[in-house]
Image (cartoon, rainbow, N blue to C red):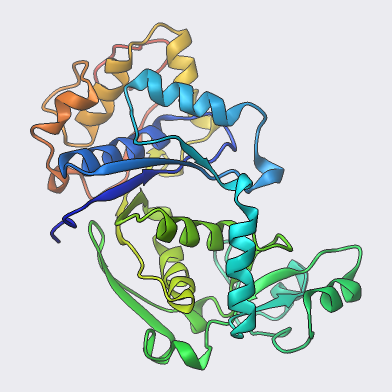
Length: 331
């Protein structure tokens, strides 16, 4: 798929923990996609997941990225400072009948399942749709809990965009992808904040307002894309192109976690690793460099070929690249 004439990409870390190799690998590909197209890349801190945000993690992520050689155009957009913008978008959706307050607990939703469910996302059949005249009325009925906002995924106005509820698109890396959103997700959560400041809504609004032309992120978010495309369509926004890359995992195939060893960028810095050794290792294992020698992001631009990126997850063992062996090449 050809890139847009005026490419705009973005790096969007979440301050829920320290920056690790998995984050860096995805950001490296995002940065290379933008810079190889002569485009712009923006920085956005997605800090709306407050229960999981760690104090100081946002600044630490920016410091680690700069240490690794990343740059971006302009300052850093911080989502928690833009609540009014997301609230206005939510009001538009609610006024048009696309969003409604829901008082169902997770246990309520689990009891409503018609079949066993694998994974975190449950199907919601629309129990609270049309039940409350306002968010305040919903809040009064479930106090002290707070309602969440749900998106009406089978709204008749979406029929042209998603025939029979199915959203289909071609991802720049994963290829053709389709999902019957009402059948798979039902009326999915839109925001857990009364004012509408939630990831599902905020990222759609920000990508539109910032003129993002392509989203590069891990393929764990590929199944969330059809729902986000529905939100964009309801708001009258064109959705950016997407490029979902395989995750970095442990040898067990699970996303990187503490059980896989310390893969934090800060740990490599403390152990004496150079920025180039981190980039070189990830570039080699991503098919973007012929060997694991230290590299800069700029040095990868000339021969950058996204088709070289392996289709399978990048599995990293505890001794492939760690604080104890910062310059080690993979076997």
